[in-house]
Image (tube, rainbow, N blue to C red; front, side):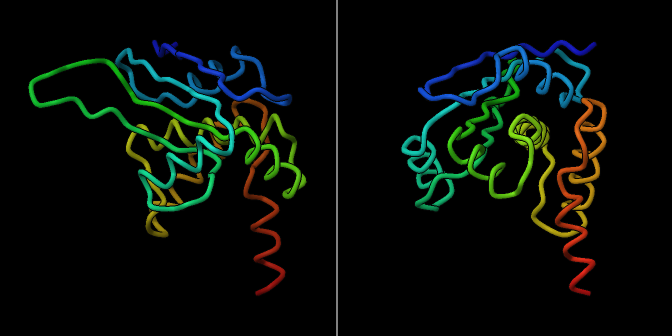
Length: 159
């Protein structure tokens, strides 16, 4: 098993947030590196998510997950993957709107964010397909169905 330490910060005061142990399991399942590392997962409210999304991405709205990979200064080796900031109200709203299990959607956000911390992205179609395929595989290992299945079916209907 990999050696990922998960620091959990729950600053959102509301229902629906899964247990810390779930976040640890999801993050460790998505950590593909062999070297020991550490990640902080911070569960926040709308205001903090909006402020961070505005400051770092120029978007004045809350978002489901923000990934902040740790970039060590030259010559410094520190086993830090980075930080994930997950907005509880956005995740809960998305799960409801997309008719998904809230627990499955939380897991997806952690897996998605962890892959970003490891350098995966979805800027172009090729990279997006590779990242989504990896997300689907990792989530399946956790017993969670393909989060993109319904969207793909709707796309097929429109074709």
